[in-house]
Image: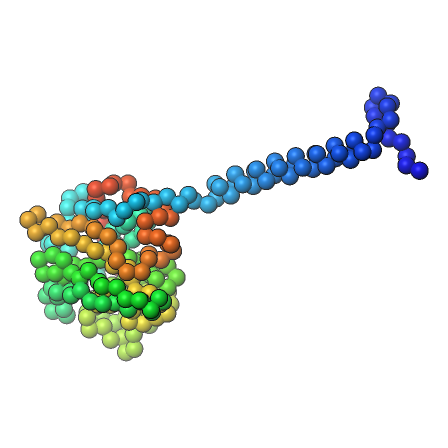
Length: 249
Ligand code: FES
C-alpha cells in the first residue's frame, strides 16, 4: 500500500501529478543547460569569416607606410620578409632571388607537382625588373609551423638537418619542425618531405611605371589549416594595402 503524501496545507497529493512535476523540472533544467552549452560553444568556435575574392593589394612597408620598391628588396635577403594575405595572420614570404654572387635570377613559371592530390599547378613565376621577385605562404604545409622556424636559406648557406649533404646551391626554404624543404626557384615545390604539398604561391603583379608590387591571388594547394583560402579567418584591416614586415632569421 502506497504511503500518502500530503502538501504543506495538509491535502493528499496526487502521485501522478507529483511525478509529472518532477519530469517537467528535469526537462526545464536540461533545456536550460543545453542553451547555456550552445551559447558557450558558439563563443568558443570562431565564426567562419572571410572574403569573397582575392584582393589586389599594394605591398607597403609596415614601418613607413610607403610602397615597397625593388631597391627595398635585398637579393637573397637572409632576414625574414613577410606580409599577411589573403586573411589576417596568414604570413607569406616575399623573396628577391639571386645566384650565389648576388645577381638577380629570373624565376620561370613551371609545372609544380602536388603529391597529396596527384595534381599539378602552374607557378606564377617571378615579377619585377629582373623577374626575380616571388612570394609564397610562409605556413609550412606539413603541420603548420611558421617563421622563424621555417625560413629562406640563401645560396651557399648550410641548412641544419636539411637536404642530404646540406646542399643549397640555389637558395631553399626549410622548416626545422620536421625537415620539409621547398624550392622557391621551382614554384616552391617539394625538395624533401614529410610535407606532401608545395607551398601555395602568391601571384604578384609588378607596376613598372611606379616600381611597385601588388598581390593578385593564391595559386596551388590550399593554405595550411584552411578548407578555402578565402574563409576561416578575418579579412585584413586594409582592403587596399598589405603590410610587409622584416624580422631576423
Ligand atoms: S611543420 Fe614543417 S616540416 Fe612539419
